[in-house]
Every structure is written in structure tokens, then in C-alpha cells.
Image (tube, rainbow, N blue to C red; front, side, top):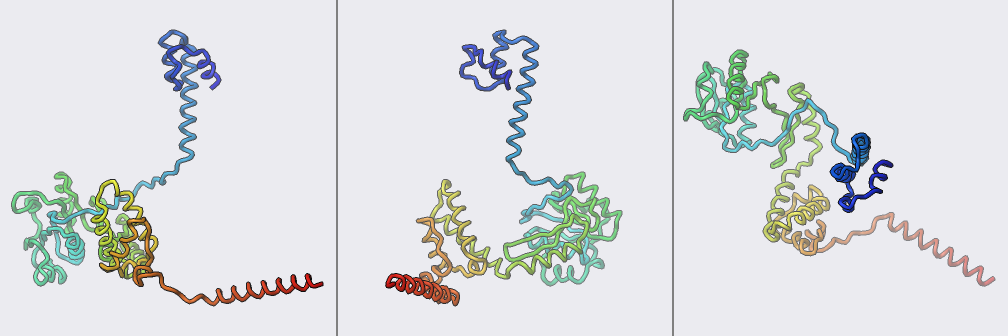
Length: 336
């Protein structure tokens, strides 16, 4: 830095408004004020000073620690997407439930003798399967739709390992995401253990390494989530929609988010679950002055008065007794 300061002391007229050391050096180089040896030395100092500044800046930053080897957990919107499910046993039936919960258009490819009880129920009684092809998988032409189009996702849940490998290879060759049950290397994605509370969905995934353990973890998490969570999320969604109607401008977006955050932090999950249309209207009154009314103020119309706690009475009596004692002692001393 000493070299840089000395360099700046001999300021050329073209450099008076240049504070960057590199710009200053480039200007002197153009005017022939620095020889080659000085250039090398000064550039070394500039590089070290720049790195030092960058390192000092990094010291004040905190970033998440990278943990390679995981999976990208995303919420895949499958509404209206065409999915081919090869198989009809217990595993395939479980896959079908997840796919239909996501509103996917599902085609099941399985011979009638390969259908389990649940899959038969879904196809014949409940009739939630959009298309059933009563044949076993034998050739790759079966992996395309009847209209000649491609499926968006292909799933296999069959015992034939050779057929599963063939389906996986064909799908990847045609850039179609594929999942082969119980064969992690042949899966482009995994199915985790799901917790569902209305719009709330929580997935526990072990990357295909411990499905049974994932189920146990999911059960523990499920017990910790309040039963009213789904209803609370629905009510918050209604409150957000109502707020957007009275504050629709794009420049109010950040303000809406802050106010909704305050509401969710002020109200408990059980209280949010009890919001109805009149209560939502009363909560929205706080938007105009950027306040959040409490549950008692909204439900009762005003803050509910509560009887003082026993410790409040004890504290009052102790305070009064102490004040009387101090006053009596002061009066006795004054009389003496």
C-alpha cells in the first residue's frame, strides 16, 4: 500500500478523479510514467490489496454449508400431466394414491392377474384411474400414449428386473423422468414419506436409503403438528385473498407480506383455524393503520378482561405492606 500511496502522490492531471488503484496505474502506463519493473511490483500490490479487501468482506458474510449427495426436494405440479404407471401391486397402488392426490392423469399398464386388491378397488369401484390397459409390459411401443404423444413421467413397480431396466433406459433416452421402485440408481426422483394436513404437505426423504426409517421419522413429526394446522392454512389463504382485494397495487406487495407475517406471529395456529368471514373482516380493519388486532379483540369485539393472577395479589400486598412499614418508620423517626 505504501507503493500505491507514493504512486498517487505524483498525480497526473488525468488521474485527479480516479480513486481505483488499477485505473490510476493504467493511466500512468499510458503516459509512460511507470516502467516495466514498477508495473509488475505495483500490479502485485494491487492484486494483494484487492484479495485482502475481498477476504475481509467474506469474513462478515454467512452462507449455508454445502452438503452434497442430497436430492432436490420440490413440489412438482402434476395437475393434468400424463403419467404411466407400470404395475398393479401394493407399491403401485401407493404410487397411484400420491399421483391422484396431485391431480395427475394416470394410465395403469398391468395384466388383470397382476392387480392387487387396492388397485382393483381404485380401478373398478372408485374409478379414479383415467385409463387402464389390461396387458403386461412386453415392448417399448407401450411406453407411448395412444395418441402418439409422450408421457410426462413413467413409473414402474414390477418384479421383472429386466423389464424395469428396459423401461428406465428407454425413458432416459427420451428425456422422460423415470422411477423404478426399490432400485435407487434407476430413479430420477424418489417418493418420500408424506404428511398431509389439507394444503400442508411435509415430505421426509432418506434418498432411497432407509424408507422404513423415513416412515418412523414422519410419524414423530406428524404427532408434533397440531391437528388444526390444515384449517389454519386455509383461513390464512382466505385472509390473504381478502387483503389483496383491498390492497391490490403491486407496490403494496412488501407491505402486505410484512402485515401478514405479523398476523401469523400474533395469532396461534388454533386461533387462526377459527377465523371465519366476519372475523376476517375485523382483522382487516388493522391493515389501514398497520396494526394487528389480537384474537380476543376480534372474537369479543374488544380485549377480554381477565381476573388478575394470584401472584398479582401477592405482589400488591407485599408492596403495600412494605410501603406502610417504610412510612411508619419515617413517621416515628420524625416524631423523635
